[in-house]
Length: 301
Image (cartoon, rainbow, N blue to C red; front, side, top):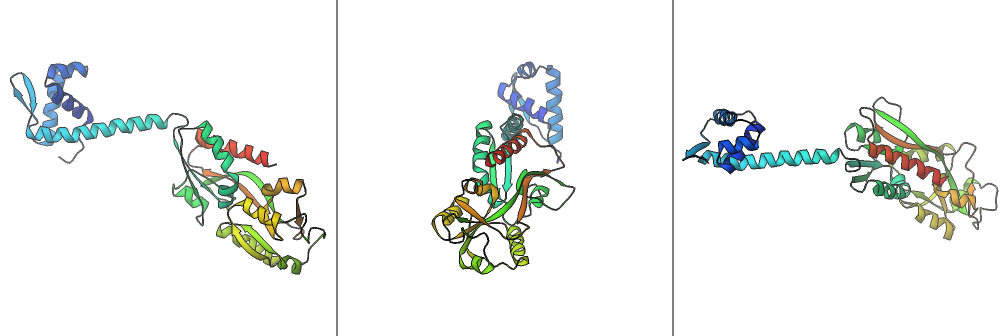
């Protein structure tokens, strides 16, 4: 009584309830009359009660049969929907993609990438979130994300890291800033002007603090902002400094509207990339996202 019911028996039962004819049911299911009769007797034995009776030559439902019919309709409909869902998921571009990204990537790097991705896969369901303070590797291991764009994690066996860019950060000021004419700025000079940072994960901020502390540099932090363009606007229009990744200020450094202030021989560097689980191959949509990210890196120079 507690075992699941056979879906083929349920299908035959529902069709028999509709047609009222063993012969017609057998014809529509391409089986024999005796096969339907045997299937219905087996179903009645399994549920422990009569489901069908006869009214003349027509098969009709008992009260128990009517109750089963209600549940059988729902069960078969759920199975049809499950099949449809799986068929759709097997079509290119109609599957879910769960992407987690470091805040810096999410707010500044990914927008044009995702626009191109959507044009290639308009039927894909995109679920995008910030890593926040979550460990990127943990998001993959716990099946909370399909792919992650983040800083290179410690070496491990469960996750593959595909580098996208190794980038150094720059302490930048506008070309009209008082410190721009100097070839180098003292530690005191660096502390006199507000410095705006990109909002980062707790790990990223900890790494920056350690980098600055090791060089005995104390910046006057004016704020942490998720938008790179907003940080650059502060640099362009105020006496503020900005501490930004090279890919974010490549154009300004090239046209010399921004000037880099040196922070010592060894710069603050971070390697960003694409993480996915080694336990399964990348899907077509994930591979396409990686390709588009690489194009974005090339565009940024």
